[in-house]
Image (cartoon, rainbow over all chains, first blue to last red):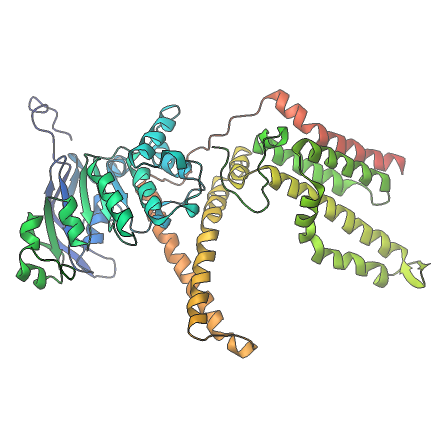
Length: 253
Length: 254
């Protein structure tokens, strides 16, 4: 239930609230051991951690692909349950690591329309959503193109548009900077900074986390091991070393 | 969003044929092919009528015959059978340039050749005037099961991805000195086909996840194909109707 009481107007629920989340895969492998995380509306948070730390498992809990073994996840105050799964998926926009996985329709325009159409948006609003989302990522003139004929940076931005068109409460980006050349990387950062949306960014790219996210959460071994301003985390060499994180050569804070 | 997905058989244009809704064109092409197949093989003139009708469509669609001919070559392997039939079929025979040919075989070969060629030409004409994406939405408009349309849509998109992946794998093999010239050196190629299958399977799972994440529940959102008006239908069906009349006259004349 949403907090729409007398106090409803005063305090909006946090965009994301994860409490005591634990999860084991069917094969018995325990991936998460009680994760707590709260992201307020409008925050941009980086989710850091070594491979196998449980980052992706956590992300797949946010939109109900995995169901919590224990604990709960709330998105904009709505609990992730079987009944709400469609609304949850609208609220949580995941941009996957490989745009080729995300862009499965014959044209860019069709692909951007896929999400909102599934969530019940109909013409003429649908076309408006598509052009707005493509505008927001600077790809408005490519609606008729096949994703196959786009550059890596363009594909990444179109993948972002496919999610923006659903008007999500929180954007979840999985390794947004992989396979991008430096210019495309900077252009994507500019697009992301201009969006003014709640954002959770899973990444190994620590300078990118610093550039985009004021706050970082480190997850390792299925628990949150640090939650602090990104600068403070990256300036703590012992913390980084303990969790297989490392600034690239030549970087120091 | 008419531009859609370019493919080698598509010839961009803005003719009346190009502008017809895809589902109308599919029905017309289907009826036309049925009429061709139903034409009795001895009704030689009728096949000429079919070709004339088709040529009329090409004129309207502004497709040069040479362009069509090169793409119709896909038929070549099937023609071989048609050419062999007159030599090997049984029944009464005729002498022609010193060769003994079977009358039945000649007719059977002609039957395959003419119907195959006309069928291929109809298909190429449809493909030349309709982007793939519209073909799929046309099929879904014609109530082809949603799952078939979903599979066709995804195939359109991922065929290129998989081909690109196969090319990269081949490059990686060749770069390490692989040069399969003999059958016993094919092992590495065969194994990479297996690897490609696994990779494609894994990609399939990731794509499904991405679809679920954007609210996919098993049905593709309706494609934006408007229903065709009765006027459009009746004009578009004219060549198909003419072909049906031609085919019927074939029986009557015989």
